Every structure is written in structure tokens, then in C-alpha cells.
Image (cartoon, rainbow, N blue to C red; front, side, top):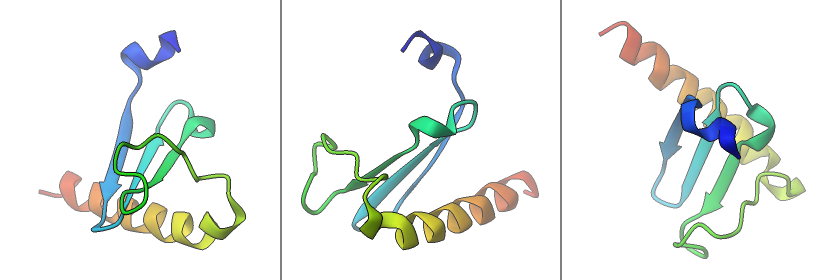
Length: 71
């Protein structure tokens, strides 16, 4: 993925999950369950059971980005 060299991303980590949003390439967004996959080897973002979690993490990430801009 040569685009990753200059790609911009945002990420949020909870006690259990890590969500990575690739700004220029959202089709490559990632979600990892750190409790069952601490080495982040299995991206679960496209699993149907992850939909609600991903939606919430996107909202939370957006809030954090807005807060950081207003500092």
C-alpha cells in the first residue's frame, strides 16, 4: 500500500477496542478487539456484529477530533 506513506489517519482506543480511520481511504478503516487479538492481526470492521460498535467509535472519534481543534 504505497499510499500509506503520506496517508492521514485518526484513531481511538478504548479498554477493549482500537478503531483506525484512514482519512483519504476510509475503505481501509480498521477495528481490532484487543482482548482477543492483542497483536491486531484480525480486522473485524466488516463483521456484521461490529456495525454498532464502529458507529459509536466513529462518533466518539469525531468528538475527540473536534475537541482537539478547539484547544
